[in-house]
Image 1 (cartoon, rainbow, N blue to C red):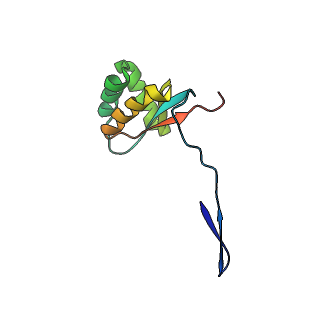
Image 2: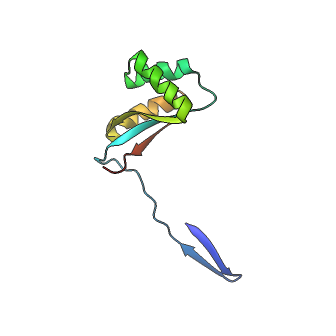
Image 3: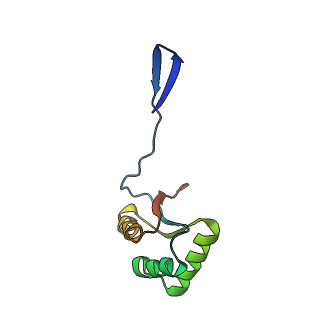
Length: 103
């Protein structure tokens, strides 16, 4: 919602559309974000345990996360990715679920 002041006595309210992620069938990606707090070892261990990646795969993901700032570590439905996202964030690592565009 945006408030616009036209004159001192009148306030117009302009509503803007907002996309809300709902549990649908759209393919989504689980994005892990870089930070200055968590170690490579912790991120790798998390990806191995939570996302069931191999150590080599988790190491490669951690390097990409570090160099690019974020990386989609898994693709799937919202329902599949939500518990993984929660488990990652419970470990203190930033993660989000994003709808894949163009599909």
